[in-house]
Length: 104
Image (cartoon, rainbow, N blue to C red; front, side, top):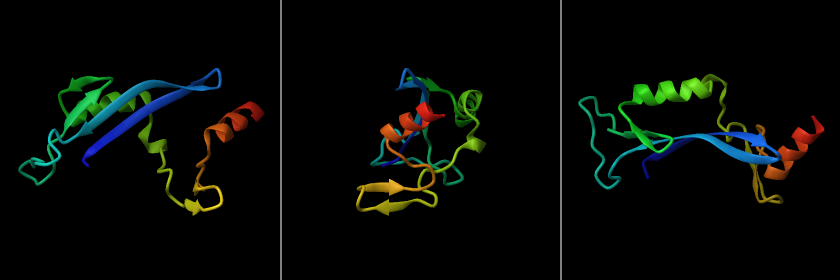
């Protein structure tokens, strides 16, 4: 599968609200086309509309989110069999997020 997503949320009234959504990937996953440098040729979309290039997509994302502040949720995370999910590096359930906000 060669499709990637960037979703920017806020929390309002104890609920997640999707603010922005970006998506990119190969048009045909069974026949991924490559450019002259061997990189996959992707289509880019922002809030459901196609954008012209990776540069434009990156600019739109940078306008709403500092990607340098982002972390992979799976860095330094471990699977907890008792909870049935990954824990660590800030990974938490929906309820844990709301509780932390309410206790802030």
